[in-house]
Each structure stands twice: as structure tokens, then as C-alpha cells.
Length: 125
Image (cartoon, rainbow, N blue to C red; front, side, top):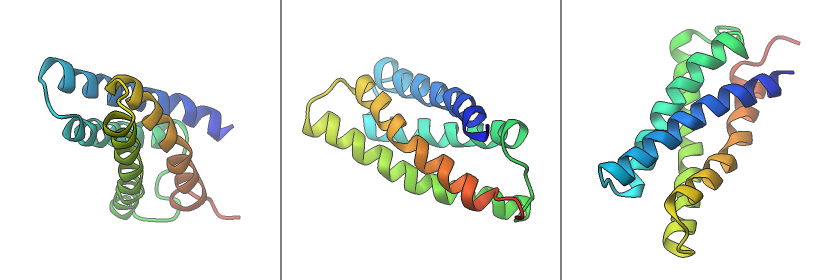
């Protein structure tokens, strides 16, 4: 059931990421690389806040500060995956940046859920 709740939380965070990415690249003409970093980082914060309210129990294994640090460390790897997919699709394949962003976001979903579920927020067995 957690994966279903995380799907909705992740969807909200993905919407924040996509809207910021689109706004930055289209309206403010920011390079896709930096727009990807900003959108992903803000979306990670949104995801964390929604996750601890709707999906995971905060403080199960780690202090709040360590938990947040771990979430952002896991997300840093997710950001690297996101940026690599964006680069491959935008620069390498010539895709529209917004279509590439949807694919990149989807490619990171299971990485983020998997590590949060199995390590950061894992409950005692």
C-alpha cells in the first residue's frame, strides 16, 4: 500500500518539478541543466514533507536531521540519473525538453521509493 501512496506523493512532487522546469526553461530561458537541478531539488523537499505525512513514519531509524540528509543524499543520486537521462534525450537524441523531463522523472521514481522504503524509513522487523 505504501507504493500506492508514494505514487501520489511522487506525482505531486513530479508536478512541482515539471512546472518549475517548464517555467524556467520556457518563460525565463534558463538552460535545461540548471532548470533540472532547481526543479528536482525543490521537488525533493516537497516529496520529503508529503512522504512523512502520508507514506512513511519519520524518525523510525534516524534523527530528523540525519533522515533529511539521507533523503537528499539518495536524491543526489536520483538527480544524477535525472540529469543523465535529460542529457541523453535532449542533447543526444534531440528530444523536446519537456518530453525528456517526463521520461527522466519516471526513470528516478523507483530509485527514490526503493531506498526510502528499504533503508531510510524502514521500520523494525
